[in-house]
Image (tube, rainbow, N blue to C red; front, side, top):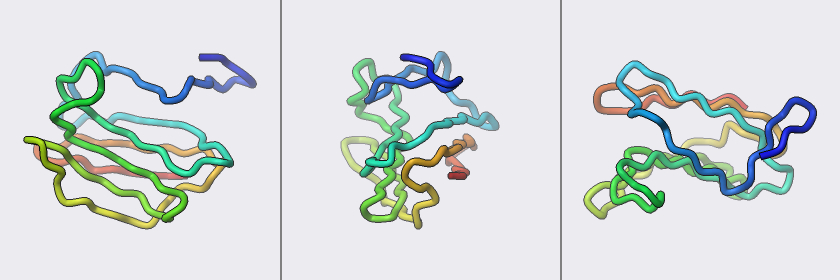
Length: 113
């Protein structure tokens, strides 16, 4: 990681472990800036995985600039769930703010970018 002009720049792919489980009522905030040359990026919340391969992914977010879509899915018991797709709220080269709010049996995602 390096810091330039007050911005932290992380090596890609960036991976990090949360110190505790996201409980209902809590919000995970992800702020970033995409590259002008970006084609896509993914955000995955993996459960009980030391190497991020994970047999259980409660939430997978895929952002595709080429398709103009953001998609959401889950992976459990070796099966992907039903993918939900929406129009992409992000633009290449812009900063974004993505918030994942945990509820008892679902996540609510807020995007700005």
